Image 1: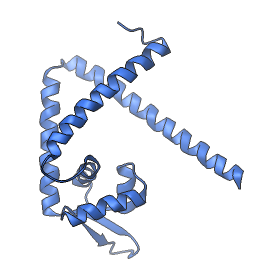
Image 2 (image 1 turned 90 degrees about the vertical axis):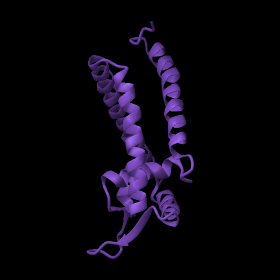
Image 3 (image 1 turned 120 degrees about the vertical axis):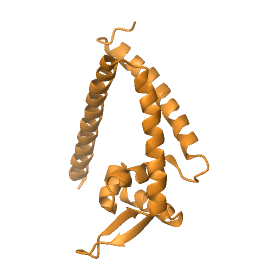
Image 4 (image 1 turned 45 degrees about the vertical axis):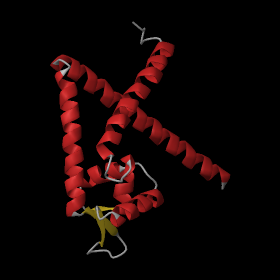
Length: 164
């Protein structure tokens, strides 16, 4: 067993385990999307809207971790596929909101239930204790990644100010 207190062992384990997990998740997602003509990124947007419908473009782009210009292109494709619709905000006409169509809601619901089923099957292979032992560190890893991203963004912002 690797010694995870040794940074080299930890980084080695992460470099081995995460790609394997991501490969499995991507393969399952590709099976899920087959025949629907959409990308994993587009499905991610549909799922975000499934749980938080009628988002502004800015909020949607932040929630799917994309630049607003890239999110706009993604939404354009989803509009063409009749999976989402754009609406002007009633209070501020400059603001564009994105909402699922009935077809988009149906597809997102199907994808969510498939994922839920897949993870339920996984959970049945783990004891309650193993599930807790998995979730807590994953939350910590996510927090650490988010902190690193904030620090990176602050450094970039600081460098840009220095260049002015």
